[in-house]
Length: 77
Image 1 (cartoon, rainbow, N blue to C red):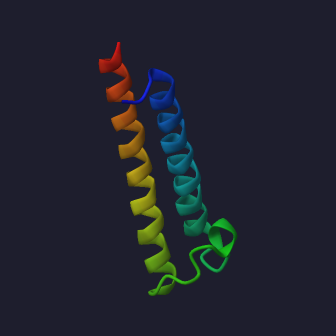
Image 2: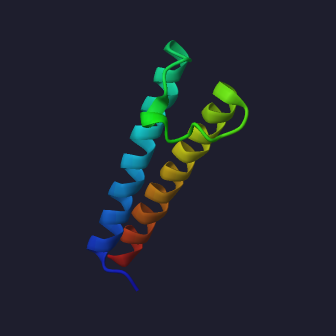
């Protein structure tokens, strides 16, 4: 079992993942040719659309992780 503080840390990590991914998605709409997030997703097939899908999935996963940790911390009391 994790402590309430550990759930808080997981929640914070999920929020950071969401924020960074969402920011990269928004920036990619304005500058499609720029390497988002320092080019970490340059290996993704499909070009801009493939990278956009990966960033969106990552943002959704971050939101899910933060929500899960928030719910667990609430029930921890």
